[in-house]
Image (cartoon, rainbow, N blue to C red):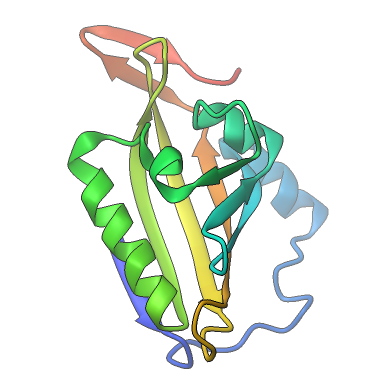
Length: 149
């Protein structure tokens, strides 16, 4: 799934609109874990949380876009790069899903939701988002892997 919408086409969110009740957080953590990320368009660096960096096979929390998407399914990489390119040129909200190919050969689904802002001046702006990593079994080459139990 690859979608992008220009800023202003969606309803603005109040500061507390993302706060889930305790039961909502528990339910969310039953199905996945999530971690935020940010990108600085003035220098092209992305900053991921520790868990998201590890899931992406990165040894550092900061990286460039190409290093970030290198672990994604090869069929999706160009689509994700194109989506980030679009988001870097026009303030946008976006989302995508793909699969991370782990060093073990296992496949880990990842969902990303984000937005870009501050693009009014050349060579400026920021990206902000969250990765969601589902907790469920995946079949890879005839074997089933149980993820994150």
